[in-house]
Amino acid sequence: MAKIDLDQLSIEELADLRERANAKLLEKVAARQAELEAELEKLSLYGKPAKKAFVASPPPKARKNQDGGNDKADDPKDDVAEAA
Image 1 (cartoon, rainbow, N blue to C red):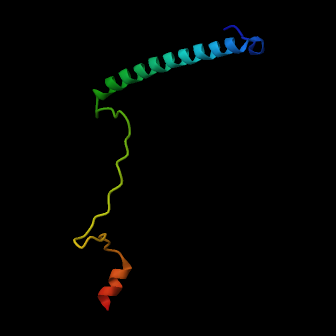
Image 2 (image 1 turned 135 degrees about the horizontal axis):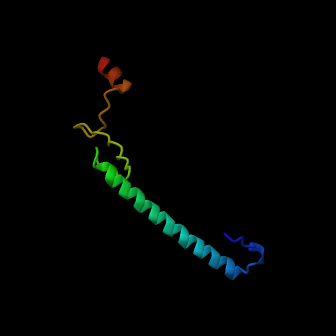
Image 3 (image 1 turned 180 degrees about the vertical axis):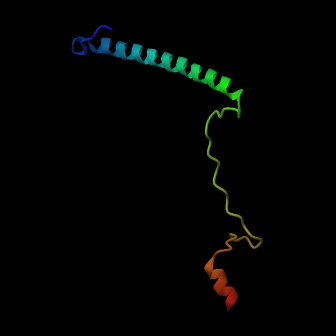
C-alpha cells in the first residue's frame, strides 16, 4: 500500500480520504457481519437456535396489597405494630 503524506494534502483531499475510508470500513463491516450471520445459521442446525441479541428484561414492579400500599413482608415496622 502506498504511503500518503497527510501534511501535503489539502482540507478537501483529507475530507475525501476520510469519506472513502469510512465507506470502505462500512463495506468490510457489512461483509464480515454477513459471514458471521451465515456461520451462526449453520451452527444453529446443531443445537439451540442462535440468539440474535441480548435484551434485558425490565425489573419486576412492586406488588400492591388490597389497601393500596406496597406489599412488604420483611418490613420491621409491621412486626412492631403487630406485637403491640
